[in-house]
Image (cartoon, rainbow, N blue to C red; front, side, top):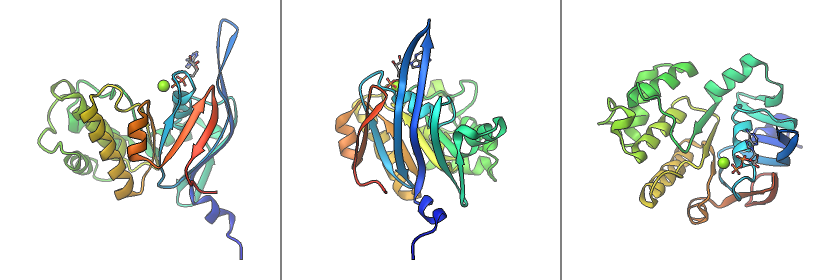
Length: 244
Ligand SMILES: Nc1ncnc2c1ncn2[C@@H]1O[C@H](COP(=O)(O)OP(=O)(O)O)[C@@H](O)[C@H]1O
Ligand SMILES: [Mg+2]
């Protein structure tokens, strides 16, 4: 007997079809995404590679609900058998999506400077509506080796430590999908390796779906079997087994 639609879809974190996005400046069109179709499985750990300006950040921002596509569809698996086209979200659904279902890790950490490490994580935890936000924030920070630095402010932490706070902030809400856009672009090679190791372990321990944009082909090869290559807003290669 064939699988029903739900159990087939349930293998996927998202299914994107022919996603297009242009930016217009002074009547000049830049096709940032020129028809991207991509399936990512639940629990996948994938690297996104491609030259500067190829559309990687645009893709991440659209997946994360920070920007919107012009056309195409992106069916996202929100868990509990719920599948939604993120292009069809209402404003409330979009806010909810960003707060509960997506964890984003940026190159420059984007921590709130007037809040301590713990408070930065706790704020995201509260917005997501999880229970025991403070307790869970402490647990994640401790797991990431920052148990003794909970009350430090961002400017009292090293770059690597700030990025670990940002990782805790992304994870504490238990999101369906974690997106990291050049998370180590600002770190030296030792710290870079440490951050990749942490992300890889998190994906294995919690079966999280993690997509990481990187310039670093060596790190990509070291930590992920599956790479997505983008050039000129198109997918040129989706290496690896994937699903479907
Ligand atoms: N807000 C914007 N306004 C105009 N053009 C943009 C904007 N954001 C990105 N672009 C253009 O879209 C293309 C893709 O950019 P981006 O997704 O940032 O690439 P990448 O992250 O791979 O370096 C580039 O040509 C870039 O200049
Ligand atoms: Mg970018």
